[in-house]
Image (cartoon, rainbow, N blue to C red; front, side, top):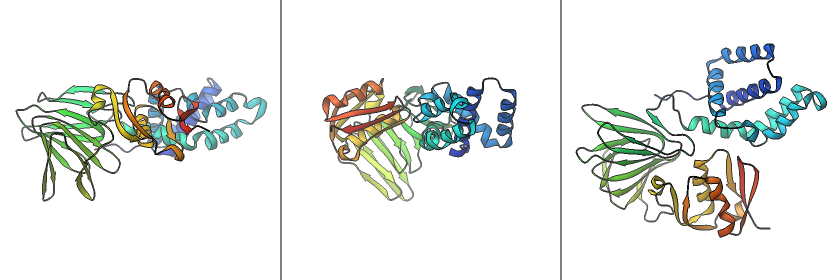
Length: 316
């Protein structure tokens, strides 16, 4: 069972405490206040630990809006009372900040998953039966292997399975139970559907009273309304296993949504260029360098406030 995640309010408060402690140095009274806040509710400690964990990889000064707020904090004695500065931080910097930090914290629950990946991470694992599993960015799975079954539960994100031909392997998602036989396939769980793409072999979709086979080369979408085959896809579903995004006449808006999965922070575009089309092969190891290619191929420019906030806009 997945543990409950701290809410956006608790995450925001944890970030505020971290910044206050940084600004005050080693103030024993403030440290004691922070400890009291942490012990007041389990969710507070949970949010604190996860913000601390995330801080190992992120510089909170680069969070959208936090730079100005921190500057205000650091000069508060000369310009503003500390509470006014924190009010600014809570209002200006934390609107949206807690949302995207919370997204990164909630995305991969490494504490309750058997296997998981962080933002921008891709990893390969050999399962107990010898099958190969690759996890894409922000993915988490649990295993249920026993004498009766071999099952991978995809909790979030995306995986590739290369099955051991000796026995079928089950993959459970929110929308369906899949059974892979000798072959190679990708399963991705989005917020509103599950997408399945088979490279080799075949996969069975088990739903109440229904059985559907997915053959090699096919792509299917499964959701609450049913299942249907995708005759055309704008992105190669297997390419990420090679560290690539391969697009075919893909909308810019959709392309940026894919790239955003591999980086922290905000990435988007203005509405007037959302339907621009993009085809090509793009390497995933450096998403920031990848974005620099866009103005060379499309009539767009990058508007970048920090490394964590990038917006693609049309040329004036």
